[in-house]
Image (cartoon, rainbow, N blue to C red; front, side, top):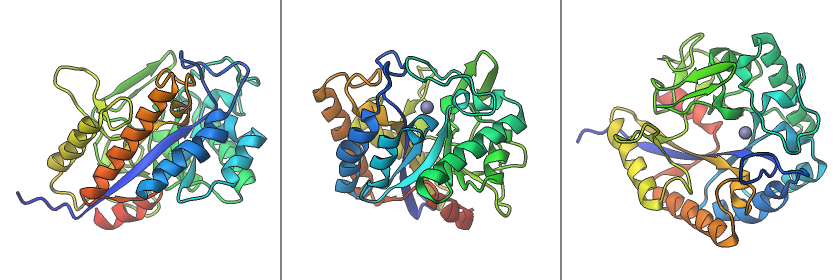
Length: 311
Ligand SMILES: [Zn+2]
């Protein structure tokens, strides 16, 4: 059929956070089972079993918790660490000092551009103080990033952002982000844009959107994500991407979810051990199937070089 596809790279981008409750509010008292138990004992062994390379995007809450940082520093296997911002939880204009029982309402792009820059700089410095290197991959809390967010990330040395969710528009009281026209495959955003692609220019950050498939009868697309999609639906989304973008030499399938989803009752999703097992089994089956279709796994930041060479 004339498809130019030569390479398919599968990434797994995980918002890595403290435990929440079934209503998506932070646990009270605050707990971190998702980091101390979920990442080393449930997620990483599952990824290792298929050779997948997860990218754990770490929040302020996690990097301020000593036990969590110790667990992450000790993590064995193949993975990448990046960052994830809950904008209300870091200076300047920090709104909460005790995160227990609170929600994180703000889009980072609703703050002034220089305030957002300082927040991202502080988040990146916190990461460096924990791990002794600079982070290069990122996702905004609630996907609340705009063109200024990308410029700020680029200034801080980030290579890949994964805040864009194609076909979706998100709103909070102070801001809206509209990704309905965003490309479905990774792209270098045009200057001062977030959903418009342009040829690569030196140092430009890569946008790697979350992989979804639009649905005819539903306004929301189907996500390439355990719990939201069955293994059969993951296969459909994979095939949809291949069919929709035959002109691209390299394709990316970018699974997303939160670390708390593998802890019972720490998110609205799995509520008991059988649910957690089904989540992990579907995740592994979906990823293993991608591998059998010829896909390779890599960390998010590795996409920057591949797409720079292929575009
Ligand atoms: Zn988050």
